[in-house]
Amino acid sequence: MTEVVLRRLLPEPGIVTAVEALEGLALADLAADHRPYLVLNMVATADGAAAVAHRTAPISNPADRQLFHELRAHADAVMVGAGTVRTERYGRLVRDPQRRARRVARGLAPDPLAIVVSRRLTLTADLPLLADPHSRVVVLTASAAELPGCAADVSYLRSAPGEQVDLPAMLTRLRTEHNVRSVLCEGGPNLNAALLPAGLVDELFLSIAPALAGNAGSLSIVDRAPLAKPVALELTWLLEAQGQLFARYALR
Ligand SMILES: NC(=O)c1ccc[n+]([C@@H]2O[C@H](COP(=O)([O-])OP(=O)(O)OC[C@H]3O[C@@H](n4cnc5c(N)ncnc54)[C@H](OP(=O)(O)O)[C@@H]3O)[C@@H](O)[C@H]2O)c1
Image 1 (cartoon, rainbow, N blue to C red):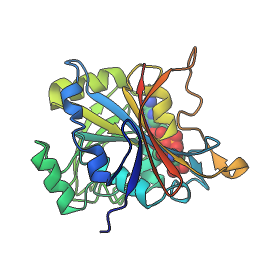
Image 2: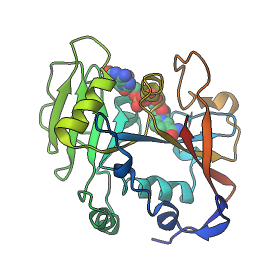
Image 3: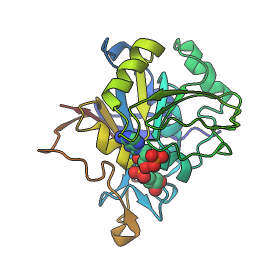
């Protein structure tokens, strides 16, 4: 794989690879006792669209893809909503053996735990992630059903039937019962819209595509999140490659 090169604009200017840009993140060290440290990683156009024709590929670029995959080498778990798992056809989260080796060198399991959020459990066992024997998946759901015929190692944390998944309670259980210290959440917008008002997001990694989607775009990264007032962000990093900006924000 050819390493892309990014310009670091903040904090100190320099040239870095995706691996170098993220080295030293140590997300697990930032965890509280009652819940994991949670970072969101999202991509959007300059006018705020989180997808074009229901996919993120048109607003991504090679640097974005390398940062996206390299971030997966830094967290105990990767969390994602059922809509995104279905649309983006999620499979094994870390396929590159070198990335798995970097995880192990950082004291992490070779493969991150996959956390899938689905109230109704509308997933099929032929999804690549569920069909992958290397993957460990925890499903957060309000359904009493089980997914039949999965080759992945699948377990369930359940909320009261028919309700939205109780995300604060689930994250506490992931921390205390499964020792999940850091979570990388890859969306989608509806899941983010539940995490954000509940105060469960610590940081946002946002890739900003040099494009305007207009009415070809859909959703914002926190679609219709019920916020009483805007959440303030503090910019801690800014990288650039081929006109795409990569911002890292802390939530105040
Ligand atoms: N720009 C980006 O970085 C980015 C990232 C991810 C996705 N996307 C795009 O976003 C689109 C999908 O959007 P989406 O908002 O539908 O995705 P999503 O949030 O991944 O999926 C929504 C589904 O997830 C489950 N869910 C989410 N929050 C829940 C909660 N609090 N409690 C219980 N279940 C919950 C529900 O599943 P059930 O219906 O199974 O109950 C819900 O229908 C796709 O076009 C994808 O390409 C963009």
